[in-house]
Each structure stands twice: as structure tokens, then as C-alpha cells.
Length: 389
Picture 1 (cartoon, one colour):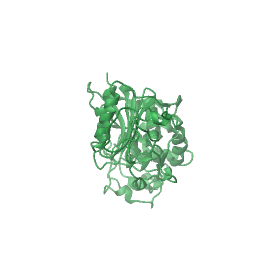
Picture 2: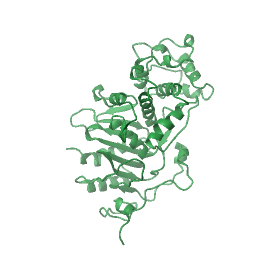
Picture 3: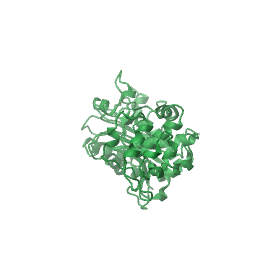
Picture 4: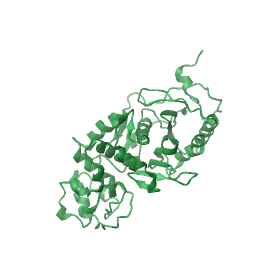
């Protein structure tokens, strides 16, 4: 009997735990999906814990076109079969902890797709701090639509918050710029690590930030050290909320998610704006499409969705290593010792990553305890070497 088209797409398909890799043609299964009646829009961090592990990994070097806007191709570089064998073997042995998905896009096409454990093609996976990166993407869309400008990045945050009573805020708060917040250098420091969270639902939107500005330590004008926090991206999202028609939540849904055909789950924090430090969930293909847009200078399917000037700043490697615009700029086994990896990274092993010199985008999701770097190691060990000249 001839293989179906779905069968021919899968190189490992129904590979059982511990089974031998028997070449490129095994009996295939369909792309793993959420069970009947499971709502993707309700796939919170807690809900995802209820998903059963897949009985076998789904791995394809010729991904299926499911009509979601992603062009598909084939991973047929010399040595690809051996690299994938090694990847699966090491994943099954637990080297990469609880890897749930791994996708690669190169030169315009999705060429590799893997789901295991909790991974589902239509199931949003918690993104942790990639949520911060999505705040940056939302800002890039707002700038493209003219709600804000690149010049606004160097203006004080407080100038965009008309509801703030300036007479009550601590010294130096009025000097915090949007760019400070985008570089995690607002300088805001609170009595406890959980102070902002402890305000709960008592103070909504600008009144939430009024409390933060009143209860921070004084902000030093020329000394705002880096501190990784959820407060700084919340400042950016609050400004988007005020500039957009409707709420920030509605703006993201219409102007970002709808444009990319993204499947996601993203709730609000107590103050009424979307969670910004962590708290969003996206399907791997959704993250891939947004990562591809970043790699292409803000364009997706020929349309300039994100500000080209903003994306250029994100992708500028002259800043060196660091965390800018909620993207990590890092050297990862770079032979020329230059930045070659620009990525949103989340706890537990979540990645939306661009390798500019390779014209390659990688997305990975995991539910690891620690071992945040394990999915990246999987790619660097087995797949990236296929594309290095």
C-alpha cells in the first residue's frame, strides 16, 4: 500500500520510546493536537500540566503545510539524517530534559518540526519571559501604526501617563525614559521583591503605577543599574494601553495576533493590563512566525507589520552582549566571537531565537525545572552545525 502524504512527511512518526531509528521512512502519525473539547485560549500554565505526554515523538524534516501562513520546505542538508538520529536519541535519553517542541525555519521555509511530551501543534505553551519579548513586539507594532514614534523612546515615561500625580512621586522617577525601561534600567526599586504583585487588583492601570512611583527608592538620574524585572515591561504595556483604541489586550489581539494568525492564551495582571514579566502562552508555530518577522526586518508575507527602525535596533549587534528591548543578544559558540544569537528566552527552556548570519529562526518549548539552556544545546549540538559553512 502506498504511503499517505502525511506518512511521507514524517521521518520518525511513530518512533516508540527506545525503538531503533530505521531510516527516513517509519509508519507516521498525524501532527499531535489538543484533545477534543480542549480550548487553546484557556491553555494557561496550570492547564498545560494536565496534558498527557505524547506516546511517541513526532519529528518531521518535511513539515506539513497546515494553511497557517508558514511556507514549508525540507531539511535535506548533508548529514541531516544522522544529526536527527542523534538528536532524538539524546532527547529520549533525557539529555535535554523535558523538551516539548523544536522548530527550525531557514531561508523562507519551515524545514524541521518536532513535538514530544506536552507539545501540540495547536496547543499554546507557556512562554515565561518570552512574554517580555512579546511586549516588545507589541510596541514595534504600535510604532509601525504611528501610535508612538522612535523619538518617543527617549522621552520620560511619565509624559505618557497623564493620570499620575507628579507631586507625590519619588525624585528621579520623572527622568525614566521608555528606552530605560526597554533596557531594564528604570531604576525603580521597591521595599520587597513582590511589592508590585502585592498590590493585586486594588489599584487599576495608572493608579497601580502611581503606587509604584510613590513607593520606589529615589531614582538616580545618571545611575540606573540593570535589573531584570516585570515592572519595566509593564510600563511599556501601560503606555500602549493608553495610546491604543481600546485596551492593550484588544490591541494585541487585533493588531498582532490576528495579523500573524497566532494561537495564544494571555491573561491580565491584577492592575488590568496584560501580564508582562511572564504569563503568556503561544503555540510554537505562532512564535516562529513572529520570530520570522523579526528576522525579516519586521516584514511578514510582504507586509511591514513591525517598525523596521525598531527591529533594526533589536537586531543591531554593535551593542555587544546583553539584554536590549527584551531580547537577549548573545555569543553562542560563535567562531568569530561576535553576537550571533538574538532571542527571547524564558524559564524552563522557552526560545524564540534568530541566528542572523544563518538566516535561521528557532523556536523551542520545554517544561524543565532549571536547565533553561537544554533546548538551545539540542540545536547547537545537532542542527546548527548543518548550516555552518
